[in-house]
Length: 235
Image (tube, one colour):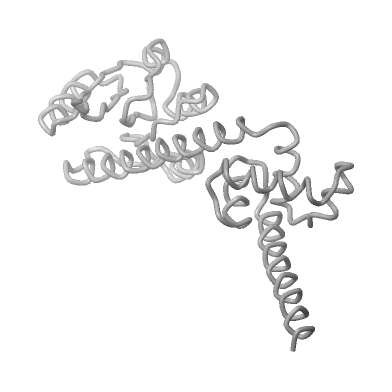
């Protein structure tokens, strides 16, 4: 299977600059899509291919920062590199805070432009990989029964078996059975790993995850105490 090169979306109302950027990027092995306005890009919203957006700030119609806001609202996660001759500190700060990868001022050196594009493509690939991992975790979570999901959410918050059993109106033995099934389905060996999965799914805060880790330590301590007591009885 042949992997297509990343696609760079160039949005600039300066026709000569747009064409020059297109030629440069094509010569560097990228696929290129050229747009003379923000509205034109919105009509053909980029899909899920690897890539990034090179975006001017001041254009007729929607400005670059306004397009950045609209793309975010539409769920488009392509990294944006601003390339403009109208940059100032407030605009730079605003666009970077809104998630822009870089803010370059025209005329920009070829090496600097390609470095910024390279960083943007790396970040996009990382986001795509993260999305794939989260999709896999969601699939695993969906395979849990409703009761297993309840036990899952209690376990990762550090609740002991006895408390979970009381809350769910069942026995500790049943909770342990559900825990075993959950761990198997998520293919993990510890509560800490399960808590990390829950956090990635957005089901758990960092403080909750610490509680889950604490519960695991408490459980180990409890087992160790039981083992020591048994040894003492047989000493």
